[in-house]
Image 1 (tube, rainbow, N blue to C red):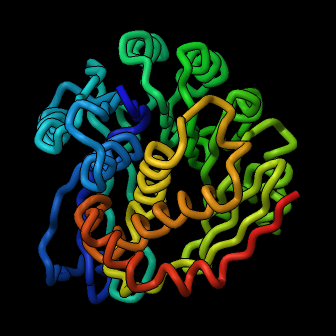
Image 2 (tube, rainbow, N blue to C red; image 1 turned 180 degrees about the vertical axis):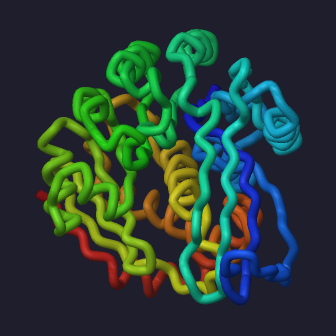
Length: 335
């Protein structure tokens, strides 16, 4: 296996371009209908990897669902996109669901039922890793995975023993505490978060200072995305800042997951995916890998849902139109 994606799985229900959110007892008609998509970091990244260029049989998805129609929906969508599913069916708990309301011109409003995601079994993930031995293990939304989070360091260490490059993309923990991720830091090759998560984890307001703290804790390469302001990357050898691409935003859901998929694709195509190798990437290679991620994230927000607009064609168009200007505005400092 080339890439195994593990983490949360969600049935996302969207209502976008709303004129407003209803007052108590008020009826508001939705102009674009209510749509359901597969969501959650593990599903989004695995589907996006297929859509931007990895072949069928090269990507798998590991995650927990309930024994219900929503779980069947997620499995069917994964299979239809050429992703190999390894779903853990959790009894007596429903599949996680997310009701997302997007008022025109405003940020998303999330309403989350965490459901089965709290019950991802570490042994289920270990068993998949032992069979697949992927080049890259991506773990998405650690912080919402219950017992799995408590065992994160051991799981990442096990992945390293199989020769995996480890890529971790957290959320602010369900418990509010970052202890399990801090204990796992030295086993993390690539770490992605947004500026809010970085501040919560380190206490640093300045994203670059937050990244420096995380590198000192043992993470190989830290990438912090800052929405329309772009991103920064930090390793022991390189500091890099890159602006965002300019697009018209329809729905910002899933932009971070799309970024991770684009970056993983770049790692596959431009490196050997060796464990600990991300910390030693030459600046120009790192820059080109991050550009793939930025293009995937920008493509994502031009459609509704986390995977709808993420295509190789959309990414290539954005890169052709904006890469030269973006790279001119990118700053790189080699340490």
